[in-house]
Image (cartoon, rainbow, N blue to C red; front, side, top):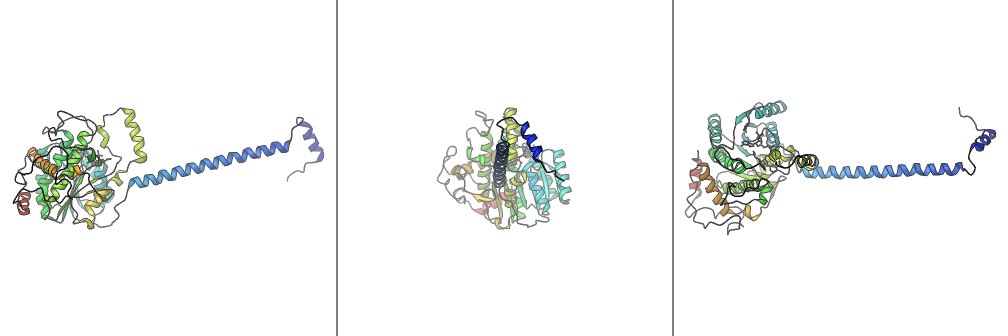
Length: 402
Ligand SMILES: NC(=O)c1ccc[n+]([C@@H]2O[C@H](COP(=O)([O-])OP(=O)(O)OC[C@H]3O[C@@H](n4cnc5c(N)ncnc54)[C@H](OP(=O)(O)O)[C@@H]3O)[C@@H](O)[C@H]2O)c1
């Protein structure tokens, strides 16, 4: 129960106060301070909430669209290269959920097995197989294909996902510059050797994981392997990713009548192990790690464009396209240059030891990435074949690649 303050008590209290002290004014001041504090607190809280919401929206936007169609691909045979980690692993996880039979083509059997066991565990799909493929060795590519063909009579989807970036200059087992050798030549040979299976299983699909870095790329005809000039950051990487696109476009013209489609994509900027070879100082690597937490895509988000290209029934007839964020994008002129694509194809055949798929071209060679008469085309590639060359000829040679 509250005690009433008697007039006597008040007079005792007032007499204790220093002269000139006004208790009411002090109470008003205190109240003002109190309200000022809460006003600031609420303002700062509002700012923090706004920043958080903007960051969250930005992050969601960066993650890009998700492939949401629920179509299953039970029993379809799929090969995914470089899938023990990163985008490849997420791609396999989703394809496994949808019932695919997947050959996980990785260079490190131990890491591959760990990923395979984890995905089997999460999806209950037992149809996942650990197979060794080192794209930096043509012998390993051939061995992988020989074993695969002995095991499987069909191949519905091939996903060329594996890649390395920004490593110090080194050579593959066959003496090719590492990034060009692994990212382009290894996949070039692999795809060519599997074309017969893909054609037998048509409609079938090839997905090539390239990169927006191709924009900075140049096919260095006089120095493909970076012997004279090597940029340890992105020079060799962007050349190899441009090669992925030129390969996709050339192959799409060669497969025109076959019901085998080939498309390429940029997965986004994704938080994976891709920068493991990044030769920068530690502080820069740490900064990159922190930044990547906020503004890079997750590997799951990074896999969505590959997944759409592999799965979407509405893309069954689409071929020769470049996709990012699940949408088709236009290409810069040097990535559409069919004369460069022809040259690269012939050069790649020689380097990996495949017989020419086409008769020698009569077109005048041009240097680098400059546009040719064909370079501004839409990718139908009608200018790529030599005189008298028909699709039948291409078909016959393609089937006999292995
Ligand atoms: N992350 C991005 O921001 C980004 C952006 C644009 C494009 N990409 C492209 O996306 C693809 C996947 O990259 P990621 O980001 O998922 O990188 P990641 O986490 O480093 O995965 C790359 C995969 O490729 C494998 N690989 C490397 N060299 C190989 C070889 N010689 N033979 C066979 N497999 C090999 C790696 O195997 P090990 O683990 O054994 O090394 C790994 O499984 C790459 O083609 C990359 O160029 C990525």
